[in-house]
Every structure is written in C-alpha cells, then in structure tokens.
Length: 430
Image (tube, rainbow, N blue to C red):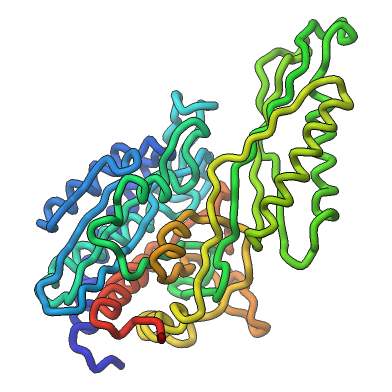
C-alpha cells in the first residue's frame, strides 16, 4: 500500500474515467486511419486536450501528431515526463468478431486500396493516454513538474516517400520546450489481462525498410527470349535470403523478410520491373550494417546472373528500444504498486520494433508491454491461453483483439509513472 494519498486519488479518478476511455477506444477502433492519414483521430485528440485547458496544444507535428503540455502548479525540481501513444492503424482486414470492428477501406493510400484496422492496439494506446491526460489535468495543482502528452502518427511507417513518426516529431521540436527528463509508454499485446511485461536491454529490436527494384526488359509472354525477365531473379533473391542467416553470428537473432512483391503488368507480359518490399530486424544494432551489405550483394549479383539489374535502398531506420537497467529498477516499484507483484514479469526478447525508441533512448525512461488478452502465466514461466477464452493472438494478426478491462491498468500506469517521476520517487540511481 502507498503512503502517499495522491496515489489513491489518482486511482479514484482513473476508475471514474474508465467508461469514457472504453468509448474512445471503440470510436478509434471503428474509425482507423493509416500512417500519415490520421486526420480524424488527431482532431478528436486535439479537441479533447483543448477542452482540458492545457497550457499548450500543438497540432500538425510530423503530419498529424499532437503534443499537449501540462504544467503542474506544485513546487518541484523542474522534471518533465513525456507520455507517448501511437495513433495509426494497419492495412489489415479485421476478423476480430468485435461488435465495433472496422470496415474501413482506404481507396487512395499508396499501393492500395487497403482494408484498415487497429490490429496492433494503437486505438487502446490513444484512449489510455487521453484518459491519463484527463486525470492529470484535474490534478495539475498538485503536480510538481510538467507532463508532455505525445500522440505520435505513423509508428507503423509512413509511405516510403513521406516523412513522419517519432524521429520527425523530434526534428520538428516536439520535445524541445520543455525537454523531457523521462519518457514512458506501453504496448498492448497478447499477455494476460493487466499484466506488465518488461525487459532490461532491448525491449524491441532495430528495424529498417528495404526496397529492391529489379529492372529487366518488358516483352510479351509468348516471346520471353526477346526480353529480360526479372521474375526469376526475384524468386532467387527470396530463396537466397535464407543463406544470409548463415553468414552472420547466430548468437544475436536477425530476420530478413520480403513481405510485398509489386509489379505493373499482366498475366501474359514479362514485366520490365519488379519491386520487393521488406524489412530487416536485428536484436544487436551492430549487425544491421553487415546484414545490409550482404543483402545488397545478394540482390545485385543474383540480378546480374539473370541478366537484369538491382537497386537496393534502406529506408526508415528505427533504433532498438533500450530499457536501461537503472531505469527499469526505478520504474518497477511503481509498476508493482499499480498491477500487483504477481502480475509483473520479464518478457523474452523480440524482433518487433517500435519507434518509441527515439524518445526512450534519447531522454531515458522505460517502455513496457501491457497484457490485454485471455491468457495466464504458466507454471514454467511461459504464457498459455485461458480455457474457454479467445486465445493469445499476436499483434498484426487479423484476429488480434484487446480486452477493454485492460485499459484501466494503462491509464493508471501513465498517471502513477508521471506523478512518481515528477515527485522524484522514480529516478535512476546515480
């Protein structure tokens, strides 16, 4: 139990706002928007933050990003906590079965049309941070410092020829005034409801977008010898990627994935150009340069073997999310107080990525996983689905779901972490 009466007051106010948080989440879920297209989402966020009479609400930051600034009225040491939520959705056709499931199709998005869904939990992230902003704004006179509410667009990656996301928010001054002394956020996922998972070191891996353009010579399919067919080269590159894993040390995992193949043609035409889109993920960022060099060599020389050419680009670099040990030690007492000691556990490494790393790595702080599904901790320390439940469904799966009862834990975590940091109770040991 906490001896600080503010903790109980925060919890009371969080419980009172829970129904509204659920309504917000359902609204965002029904109305998902793809990266760099989050206009409606951002408008609702900005309208609500403005209604809270914050000291400042900035819009249009890195596309549709919104930044709220709340200056506390209690004396303090000038600390600034940045709370971050990502607001974009995915090009996924939803199969969750929810009554509020999305049916949106974006007809104009580059490469589309695409069905759109919040298949990664960002609707919940946005709703939880709106709830936290509401609670903390109501307690501003008792906050000994400043809270930055960072609603970030394009976490999933904007179209390749556009800029956005966390890096661009920083470039456009989102955290220049005031400068955070800590950043905090969390990601909903397939862990037991209300459980918090953490990892010292890389919570998420490093990532980049890969674009390989293979150029041949277009010709009719009845006379392939008169052209240069890039299709076999595309297939050979994808097969060859399996050998990249054997060319780098196996102690730090990597993945190279081609997720989309694009051409302009017809069933009876040998295409003149094929584009392969993919991603590289590395647990150890030091491996990224080596993997890139090997992939470039594979693409260029394989293309040459088939008589065509390859150009390889690496875009949208995202550094690994690094939870430093001293920050984890500082935040765990707060997390345990909020969700309970039995609901806090260390998670295994993952090659997922999240550009919250731009905030956490620069300003210090922690990024957590927050459970939101029908699971439980098994006796061996792993995870297992609850019998009769909806199972443990990974992010980005069409069946991905979030239980609404997990949202209150997220609102409380934002508020408790913010208050504890501002008061000096949540600081890394020097």
